[in-house]
Length: 164
Image 1 (cartoon, rainbow, N blue to C red):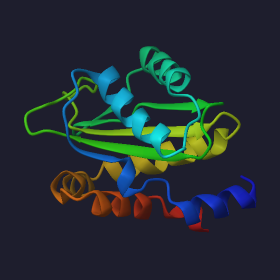
Image 2: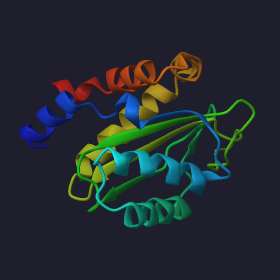
Image 3: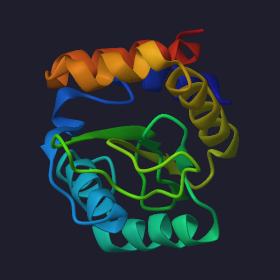
């Protein structure tokens, strides 16, 4: 990973309060991805909404992105991504989305967007995020936060490898 990219990521943060949707009301996983991708687009983190979403949905059709514990992690490496980013959605109470996890539907959705050329960064973000999300206390902290800034801080602090 180039040093400049690492520095840029640690300073800018992978997510911000503006990339968090609380009480998300999505009809299905594609709708959830579209809502989160719109946040990325509005914040200038992706350059083309439709192109990026097509890649996310294509990836989703190849393999389910649901994790145990009610989490969906749709993701794509894309030429439309300007900056590695994570948009986070916490669904409205009782609203769950099927991301194909073996234990049921998701109420936490984290859309991971990485530039096309950043293969190692993409894998490192996904694996580190997954390790955090496998911990029940971390998932519960995200669900209970009910505050965009707290959620952004939890996500960013779980990905401290970028600060090395």
